[in-house]
Length: 273
Image (tube, rainbow, N blue to C red):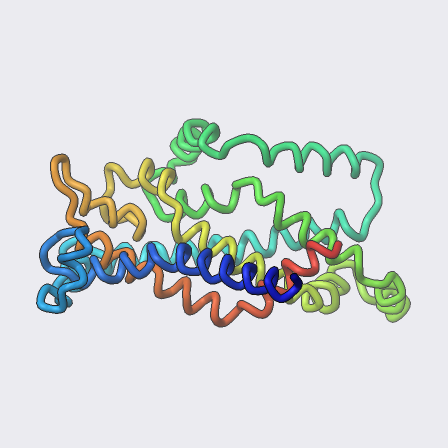
């Protein structure tokens, strides 16, 4: 009975794995196809394979500019979000104040509000600040979002650190900032990896706000918005769109391979906490 259950578990895991990988395989096959078709009979024919779609995606859709814009927005946004959420988590995890529990409850409750509800107020605010037509506006949209999950991850991690470590640093004359920057923050590497990977993927793939902010300025388009150029009124360039998708996915795969151990450790720590 036990062996039969293990066999069925393996079969189910393999089946789910195939279902998860299948869309990526189809994306790659369509990207290498020159007939703009999604038919299995066509995309599996080696005679139709080509690299032209990748050249078209990079040049025709101005993907080089979109790649640069996405890189700038993602790099700056992730760094600022990492710093802000880490400091907020440190304050909540290591300090006590009267309204702390209420603040955590209100902050957690804000997670149920869909982000799309804030799109119009955010746009109006950026317009007032006169940054709605710049990369700075895209960065502010990402940084000023409610990154509650990251704050809670850092908070739980800092709470798990023994008080004796902080007390020893205070006795040696270290200030609260020195304790945070030199001791606490370096010890949060698993959570840092989790935040970096998760927020990078979210920012890299963001579509709604970048689309709204770049409607009148194509030079500011990010990769996700540039891909929309392959969507016509009556026809979709599937080959070009899938090639663009492949190009956009590569940096995220590299990032995950570099930080996967920290990501897994961070998630495990959050679950245990």
